Image 1 (spheres, one colour):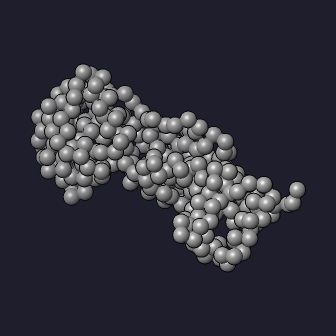
Image 2 (image 1 turned 90 degrees about the vertical axis):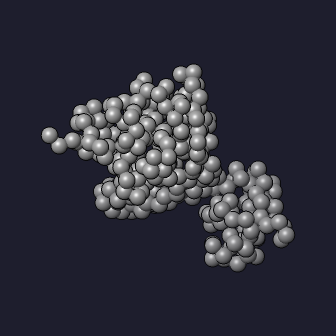
Length: 324
């Protein structure tokens, strides 16, 4: 059987990211004809058609081609890791590409990009923010090393590590009567107007939380940004139900105060987890990133929880104690 070169694998591994051969060739800095010849050579070697090349319809990988590209990316990645390990010795060097679920990205990504980079100066971090529909395909194709998501409704085929616990909390206007208490009962919110953070998995989780109590929420508005939920709550348009997040101040993007209260009894708890395909081995750099996330983000959530249990009585703004 003819040999397959590392360069051929590298070229083919890039194809899933492009819809045309010309775009792939431009990215790879080779001619379109040279890329086409490399693909043809691979197909002759493996004895199967790996992609369909039509000028009018662009480039499409066959199922065999998709499998080949995934495996090729892992071989390329392993080869790079081998070189980096030899060069770096005990120091971590090289890239880590991680994804983050959009609803808590502003609370997580800055801590990781800034704090981890100061600790491990030889590691280059890149991040992608999106929904599960964006992150899972990127993990499977090898474009991401790991992704931070909620552990709700995870598909089969992934390993995971818990980063921090999360729970539904009520976000209220400071003048709302329920804001006077230390906690809020979900039953007391059922007839109130809910400003819902409208993503498919979050909607399912919220409905299930109410259904478990024999309740149905009154959804008055559906928005796709957490900051907009908080902005509307701060203006008195309704209440919000959002997962607890680290590094969050109880104010809207406009600087208006918001009162945040845990639910009692609590809704089913969940976790933010780091996930990666079960047939992939995390690099030492990715493991270090997860260790950092557990220490910093998990510690932040524990401290916030302790502070809430010791919360002093709040003043009319909902963000500070009443003066004696």
